Amino acid sequence: MKRVLIILMLMVVTMTVSAQHRPQFDPAKFDADLEQFITTEAALTPQEAAQFFPLYREMLRKQRMLYMEMRRHRHIDFNDNKTCREAIEKQDKIELQIKEIQQQFHNKFFVVLPASKVYKVIRAEENFHRNAFRRAARPQQQQFRPQGRP
Image (cartoon, rainbow, N blue to C red; front, side, top):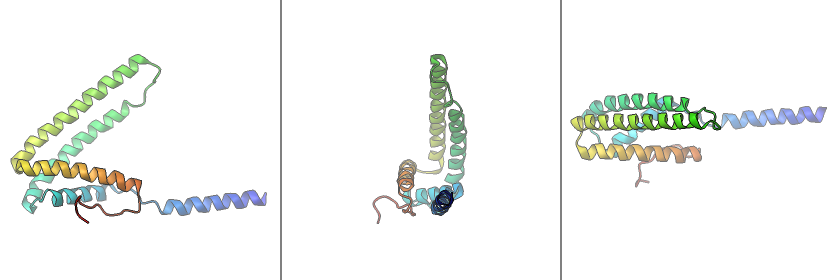
């Protein structure tokens, strides 16, 4: 009985210690890091950033709403072909809506930024998310680094 208690206590202590070392996801920090990365990579001036980021945040907010709707369609009965087909069709429609939103906002971005900077913003966002996935796989890496720089 004592052995079982000791083993359980050791397991609890080990789990507690390991849980404390995992960094928690902070959405506000993630968004701030994303904006800083985009600003640096696309070489946005403070005036350009002030005009661009409200539009960008609005685009992300609309896209996130659609992504949340897509998540609702993932919990289906895989043995029911009709339900699966409907879920696929709904997800296809939502993905098209996401692309339409993206296209609409890209056109709005062209009003406040030159096309070359819009392209750099798109590439920077892709690179940021790629780095975020790498960072999640290797938690010890704390900083987002622009590509091509040490």
